[in-house]
Length: 113
Image (cartoon, rainbow, N blue to C red; front, top):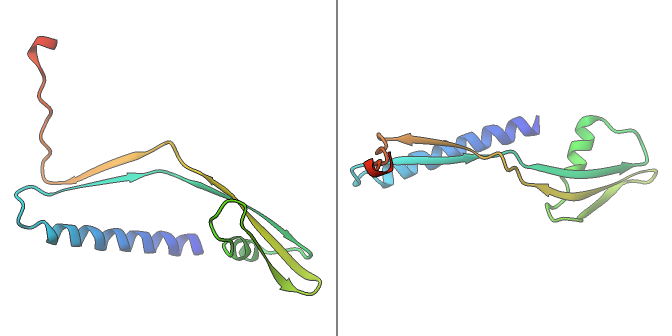
């Protein structure tokens, strides 16, 4: 559920940023957008005195600061938990998207053919 909310928030903020950029650059003849997408993986370990639901695991993990090795501890007596942020693996599968006005084609040098 939190991932869906984060995705919705990201899309809404991206749309607002695009609208702002479009209005800001109205005096320019050509306007373009460029976006990069990649998948990053954040890793956590969660330890608990009691069995947890998926939602509880996610809530505890997301209580960590996104600093490598950061540990978050809490819970009541006999229901203690500990979460550790292990780190982020940054995606190397970047996808790109261009938008806006028509993009100029690159010139080809006839001597190279």
